[in-house]
Image (cartoon, rainbow, N blue to C red; front, side, top):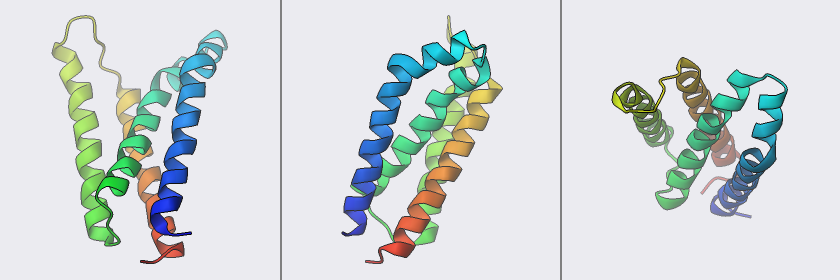
Length: 120
């Protein structure tokens, strides 16, 4: 297996979990009063999805390029969260900012280890 195949498999697994999260897990978490987790998990998953999708579209084995792309993604997610302050019916949530940062950090580590295990 090559790096691209592993990234694609990771993307499919994350997409499947996102679907499960949106269809049933999120409702369950809200019923269990886990509001922070239920509200911020989509941001964590969005960061993972964007990061891995970007690596599939524009693959890079250089840690510097991967880091720059992750920083761009997390910056965009944080800017979107800040923009919600000025949108009607939208809410700024600091937990979403933290979840975006954690999601991108996890994505960076995942991509880093995949690149280490499957060199070009």
